Image (cartoon, rainbow, N blue to C red; front, top):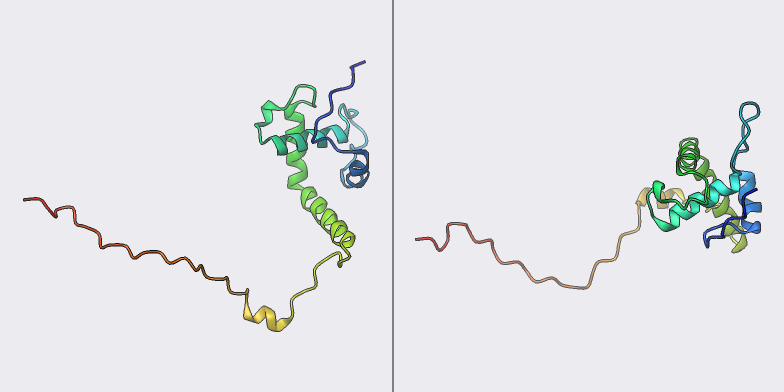
Length: 138
C-alpha cells in the first residue's frame, strides 16, 4: 500500500468536495475499474490551474498527467466546467442574500445598449507630425 501523499494547498477540503463531488461524473459502469479517485483527479487539476505549469510538470504523487489532462479535456468538451461554475455562482449569490441568477434587464435598458464607459481625464499631448525619411538628406 502506498503511503498517503503530501497535502497541497490546492487540495479540496472535505466540505468543498461535498459540494463538488456530486457535480463530477462517476466512472461508467462496465469496463475497467477506475484507478484514480475523482477527488484526486480534481485535486491535480486544481494544482495545475494554480501553479500555471505544463501538464507534464504535475508532481509525481498526483495521478499521471495524461490521465488528468484526459479527464480535464472530456469535462471541458461536455460542458462540465460551465455547469460547475453555474452551480457555484448560484450558491455564492444565495449565500450573499441575492437571487441565484441575476434579474433580466428591462426591455428599455436592452434597447439602449451597454452603459457608456467613463472617459479618461488624462490628456495626452498631441503627437508631432511624422518626419519624412528623406528630410535632412542633401
